[in-house]
Structures are given as structure tokens and as C-alpha cells.
Length: 382
Image: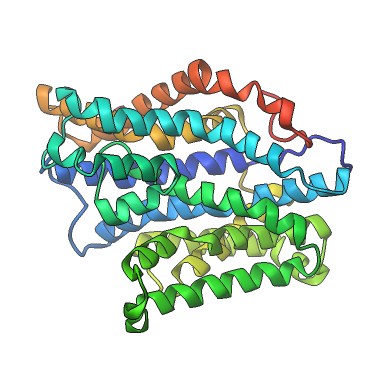
């Protein structure tokens, strides 16, 4: 790779949209259940199991993508200037993540509870704004994963738990990559094994004697750095083209097709693998990402104007879709349109419209400053 070239991996914008859409499907059914409408949220049929796992898998796919892309870009920066500018990395992430995150959190805590149109059954304002100081503190310091685990659902902001996880990863990862230069593949493996060993320990009775063990257990369960380290492993392997035998085994059409088939089959069956669920799915996603990004011989392509446009606004899709879903359910109840034939297209289209507006009228105000902190040109030229 020439260090001055713009780094752009094809198909990954489309994959971002698919990840966001899986979360939207999951939450449409969840919100239907909250409004006591017929839904696929509860039950033991395969479709119910599918609905319950796809949202979480959409988030895991986001995490693996982040681990892959961030690691690759950090390695490219190191190659270009022989170091990693940690403060500039933080500024790029702040400009991309914080504006919409903070807007959603503050509106969800202080404005939305007072808007009747956005009220939810079972979530009175007193409950939403209970422990308000603690909730605000945790959100502002990007412990949104702890808010959900310890203080319950905050309508329209609960999806931000994963933003907390990503911000914690972003805080650590450039330091890890900058100061640990040798045996990086082994480092990624050690992180995966170490994270899961600690997670199992905290879930066991042994941890009951630890101070604040409940907070530790819930925080660690949501940290999920193993998923991002798996993405990082594949980025290191692709960047270094080493080990060549493993890269050849995984970056080929057969491995890609098997990974796609595995993911789809497991979604349809609602499969969950105790203790190793994140590892199994993350490994599958990493193979898919590797081939989408670097294998021109695969037959499935997500590189087109529509998917690129939807991928560019995927952050907004993820952050704003609960608002769109509730508005569409309220509209459906008002006019007798309670049907999946209305709710799914309407919720998706309204989410896209809101995310498009957010991206072009709000997020871009901050994104235009990112180039001042960029060492490596990346992404599309849009």
C-alpha cells in the first residue's frame, strides 16, 4: 500500500447499512411489543428467535467493522509517519461521534419525555428522569453501556450503549497499537482470550466477593473488545500480508460464501453459542469484511450509489431509528394502519429521511473539520 493513497475499502458502506437495518428490524418488533401490538418479539418460533438475535448481531457487525477499519488506518498512519498521533485520532473520533450522540442523549433525557407524541407505554416521565444526575454523568463520560445495564431503558437513548462501548475502545486502541509493535496478531488473540476469561470469571460465583462486582460484571459484559480485536486481527493480517497461508485461506471466494451461508443460516435458526457467541459470529463477520474489502473475485457486490449513500448515513440510521419507529406506530394507531406492510417501509423510509437530514444539516458542520486532524486520507471522496 502506498502511504499517500486514499484508503477506501469497497462494499463496506453497504455492510454498514445492513448492520443498521438489522437493528431496525429488531427494534420495530420490540416497539410493537411495548405498544402491545401483535409482534414477533416473544415466542419460541424460529422467526421470534431470528428477531431477538439480529439486532445484537447488527451491533457486533458494527464492532468488527470498527476494529478492522480503525486498526488498518492506524497501521497506515504508522507506516506513513513512523508513529501514531493519538490526540489527532481522538479529535477525528470526537468530531464524528460526539455531536449526534450528545444531541440524542440530551433530547432523550430532557426534551422527549415532555413530548406526548413520543411517549411510550410503561415509561412515565418520573421513571425516565429518576437518578437523572447519575444517568447524565454516565452518558457524558461515555458509560452508556452501564446506564442500560444498571438503570434501565431510556427511550430513544438506550441504543447508545454501543456508542459507549466504541468510545471506550477508541480511547484504548491507538495507545495499544502505538506502543505494542511486535507480535500484533498474538496480541489480538491474547485480547480475545483474556477478555472472555475475565467475562466468565465475573459471571461466576467467584466474583461475588469482589467490591462492586455487579457494576464490574455489567460493564465488562458490554465492553466487547474481543469483537473489535477480531476485526483488528484481520486488519493486521491484511496490512502485513502475513501469515500468507492463513490470508490465502480466508481471503477467497469459498471462505466468503461459507461465511455468508453460516451467518444467514444462524440468523434464521436464531442460534446462540454459549460462552463463545461473540467469537463465532465475529470471526464469521471478519471473513466477510476481509473479502468484501480486498477480494475482487467475490460475486456479491455492495458497491453502488444507493448502498454508499445509505452507508454514509448509517450512524444516523442507528441513532435516530427509535424516534422514527415510534412516530410510525403512533401514525398507524391513529389511522388504522397497523400492519407490517406499513410499519416496516414507513419506519425505514422515515429513518433514512431523518438520518439524511442529520448528516447533511448537522453532522457535516463538525465533519468538515476532520481533515485538519487527518494523517491518512480515507473513505469516499464525498
